[in-house]
Image (cartoon, rainbow, N blue to C red; front, top):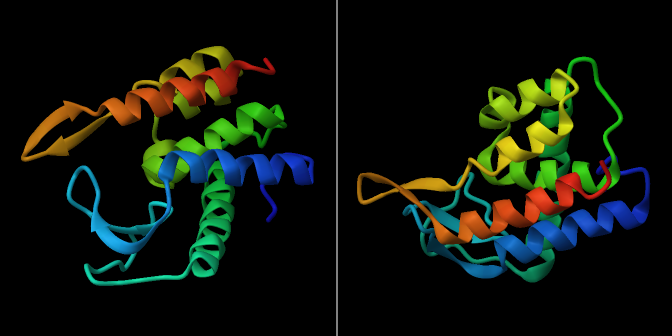
Length: 156
């Protein structure tokens, strides 16, 4: 896994951090907003009734984290070295919200302006989802964003 955290330990920490928040489910289920999901939060092409092995889920997570990290990196102008813990938090957030949403966010604008503390704070705003047609704050996302924020600012 390449997660550009400058170390194997950083790559492993990213896997553990994201996997811990996503949880592992080997059978497809509907997430809190009703989207068919499997493994560590994978939604692309998932149908109810799908199953996977832990090895398949681990491989999906590694591939997906690489894709999300690369997508996030393309948003940075100019590409900047970001402290390892900050990068882990941002890859986790991007994995959860998607590259497009992350790249068009206030958080990325703030990182691109060199305001890392404020960029980390902006990540915490992403704690809502649409449930039964209503936009609501999701407690699990509040907790995840708080953990990502703490990690994000840890090395700044």
